[in-house]
Image (cartoon, rainbow, N blue to C red; front, side, top):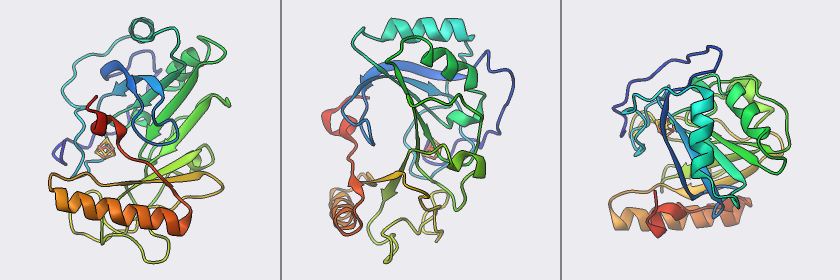
Length: 232
Ligand code: SF4
């Protein structure tokens, strides 16, 4: 959290056991499925350490096999829930292909969303029920991943956005350092959300700039609904 996590490398094996932080049922808070009830599978470890990241993904010692993980997911999923979100940490740090395949095979209407920082790649099954949301945190995206990305999501801080396209020009790894984060490619939708800070005035400025940028560039504004309504 807050940039002090170790940068964990990609661990590619047969994907039959995964390091998992937690499995929980909640409302998706942001992006294309915002407001959608979903079972979240938070995988452990990340290959980056963003200085403002407030997610806990390092404390787990749980490494279930796929059967145990799927039992856990199904126990958390009400029958009406048709969305599983695989997040992290960085999901592509591990071989999630077998997990994604098993999830897509559970029910014909079940959708799977993956949230990624865009730097790593694992070849996943092709399916129109698989939706990859990339929130770029570095200047470059993994070339193999790019063609599979359905949506982009950017966290915007006031005064740290590009005057031409409105997207971030600041590093996520070191506060105050300039870096032009990777830009969206193709026809994928673009979502912007304001950076959340502890300072109400900073938050107000971030929100205001985000709204202006969405209006100017045709991006979709998304808020961290889960924080506003007080759920994890
Ligand atoms: S890439 Fe995502 S999970 Fe990893 S440190 Fe950055 S914000 Fe946190």
